[in-house]
Length: 187
Image (cartoon, rainbow, N blue to C red; front, side, top):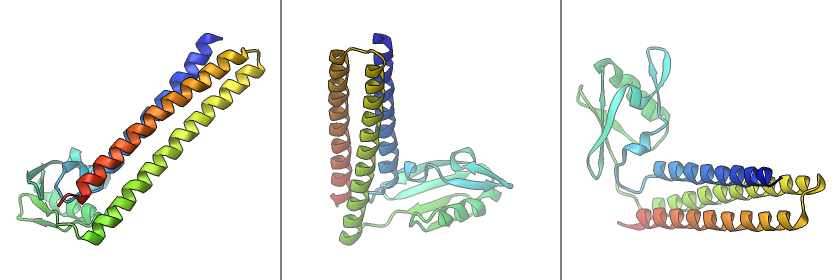
């Protein structure tokens, strides 16, 4: 029975780890006024009729703190990449010189900074909901095991372990949110 309890705890922690990873990826896409190739992660380009991730058809990098450079492996891909950037509605205006696509990241206004901070807090709240759901699922499994004959003390200790784990992940969420807020509000 102990192995089953450990499995439940491990699965819960794995789900929580996944939620934190997802938060990190989401926060990366929220621009803080500086160019970051990660802003274009997940961008899908029409590559001769096939939906293909941008990183599979071009090199993506930065030339300075405010410019993202996209260098397609084929010149014919410049148009479809620009279309994909515009369709993604990221708020970028791509421009090209026939060889590379440049995206200038504009300075953020105070109003835009405020809305980005709200978006960051919303992402954090979504992650906390995911963490709570993982905890709830694990506790329900433990209660089911208790009904199947698992000792009450072991269930109680396991619930305490789950609570300590979720507290640790909550702190990580707060840290990530605080760090991103600081990035956004820094001029």
